[in-house]
Image 1 (cartoon, helix red, strand yellow):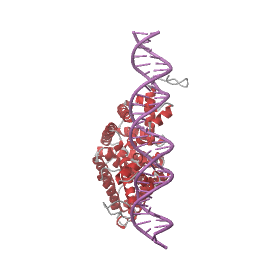
Image 2 (cartoon, each protein chain N blue to C red):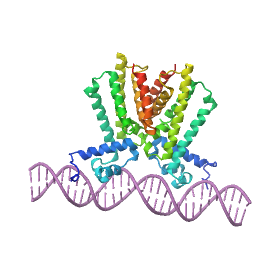
Image 3 (tube, rainbow over the protein chains, first blue to last red):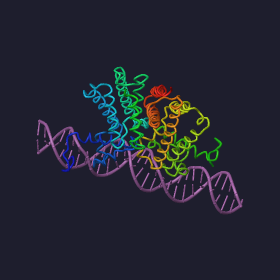
Image 4 (cartoon, rainbow over the protein chains, first blue to last red):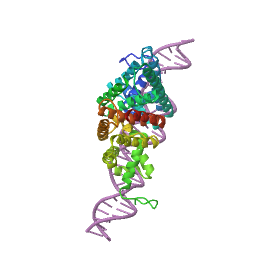
Length: 197
Length: 197
DNA sequence: GGGTATACTTACTTATTAGTTAGTAAGTGG
DNA sequence: CCACTTACTAACTAATAAGTAAGTATACCC
């Protein structure tokens, strides 16, 4: 049996519920501070059941980052994002980070994994590098277009500015975790003040 | 005996060698990914010997952050730092981060602990909050003085800008770890370009 | 109704973790 | 030279980690 009368189970549901929970724990505690037991307990299953879906923790971790990368690509190419003018594309990005800050000061995936990076499986490292590179490239292009049309203002190269902005946002969520959302809003307010013409 | 003929041992040396090594591991792997065994192996001792100096890992972790806080206060109050004009005080701060980047893309202590913050002992959390607050307050005052004398340039409040700059620096070291030093230099270059009048 | 795939559980192994306790060798002060 | 302190080691415990192998209940297909 899958589960008794308590809830209706959709096919493939457990697999994605595991991934969702693993991602929660990852963003909440870091990769080295969550275990199959944590996930199993939450789902009222045995740890071995998690291994059935994700044989090793490497697989699970890599799946989390790979899914986030797929989400990024999907989001970026969404008509309601891709067709926006540059300043509003930036605003859409900030909205994503804001939702993290509101959700119990959750850090972003990059911020959650960067510090422990050297203890991560090689496959996770590779996916995270790709994720960061693609996001930076996207923002650099947004910034360049925004400056060209006069809606965004900054000095220096778009790619350096993109790196700086993303780095600041990742860091801002970490500061929010250490203190509270106040410094996060302060930092993002500063970013808006400087960038929006 | 402390150790045989191989080296002369100073009193209190083991204690600080443990702390040094623990800090190395902390910045290298994160708090949840190093153990007393790692330190003991490096020092050619038994894990119990580490417990002799630092009864619990909480004590050890707290000692690391507390020492870093003492170092910050000492550095900040050093004549060769305190007596500098604002723009050079900022430059002195950047030099500290640069040395981290050069030292195998080491992250800063804040960046190493922020992601796993909620898994840390309460005493470490408190010390880290103090550390971050004091550093931010110091930089805010530097920025305010620099803008007043015309050597530094930025919009918004000094404390928001200080938060933003420190957050960016912490994040820049994390990016360096994930990729290499190139993006770090790009980000710090951007900071200099914007701040230095 | 039999076979097979799915979705698990039970029961285990091996490794590592933090931490404790008792003991011991070497140096120190009286 | 004796008591005491310092700085450890040896030998544990209890908990938790990732991972495996074998078995089981259910559903679906022929």
